[in-house]
Image 1 (cartoon, rainbow, N blue to C red):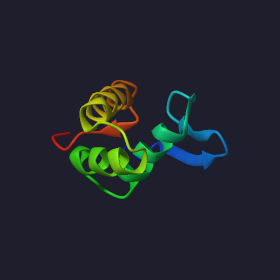
Image 2: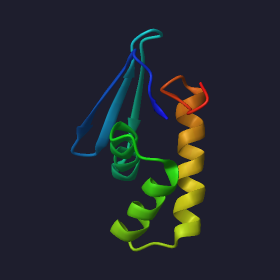
Image 3: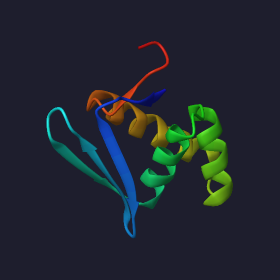
Image 4: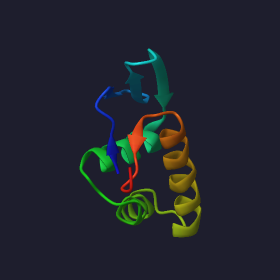
Length: 86
């Protein structure tokens, strides 16, 4: 998975801001969302992002897995990222 060409994002004090330039949509996310975006930007697979976040936040991996999957689905639905098959 990777960011689509028309997407820009940056980290902020509160998390991150994502700008989808084709439809001129702005998305705001918290620190955990920013960590997921960073992992995507580094070319990491979802499982690797989950593993790292579970360690960073000392949280149950199953809870993190659900949240990451939902967030990635939302990013895909909103045209922010392209899956590995796209």
